[in-house]
Image (cartoon, rainbow, N blue to C red; front, side, top):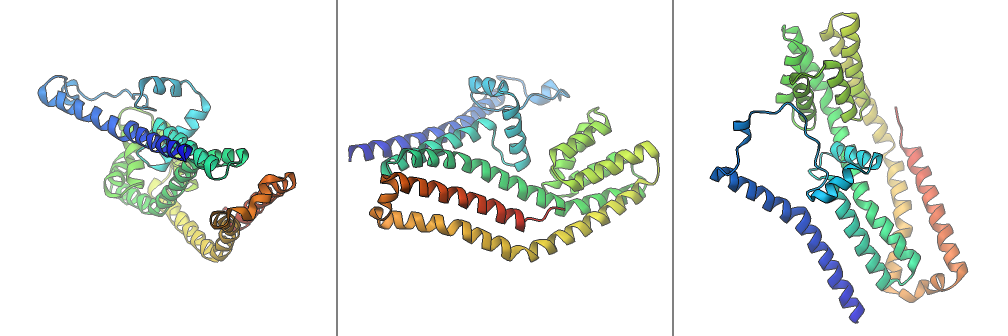
Length: 321
């Protein structure tokens, strides 16, 4: 009983510590900075004048942790790009802290209720990867929403150019008129080239920030027109029509494959749900699986087959074009 209470207190302490570092510390820092500016203790940004130099992104609110993450190389850069593409207001340090707290909490809970070391380790890894899957899901939804708004943005730019405006004016209109996420990405594109960057570099950064084939169509069309000449407004109208047709085909394919995806989700979740439910209401039912070598091997083989089947089913029901 003492171990259970110690574990409960430890998990609650980890959650409160994570909340304090992720929420309380940044809020206090912002409030302190605001009070200093109101009292005249530090100059405001308006007095200093706008800076055209791009400051490095802050990976963590803790200076030492921020420096360590900045030196960690490719893995940190990849995770930071994934967080940026998701649109979540979450820096890399907060993301890693949430993953670590979730993994440790799952490990302690599994160690108490299951008392099998490899299942506790699996719970640690699985719970630690859940935030990554959530962030990737948000990123995928954001890209899909961007692709739905993108034809309207291209038509808006094409109409502004037919009215006699420059491409930069069309980009500004798209940034002001469109809702997020398309408006946010076009605002970044406009501000990047407006502050002195080459248009080709700004467009390539725009294509890298939005992992969408439609954005690459747009960038390729604009860069090709700048090198070879031609009517850019007409080219953009054709690109917008092509993207609309692709979106229509994508929706049709998604509707036709919905039954297969639902069947795959049920077949994947049902064995895990039954196993957890039976283990909860009747813990002795699966005791032989954890106490004998053949039972452990059977669970490992079943898990491997479940993973292979899941990958196969989702690969079949996902159509890429």
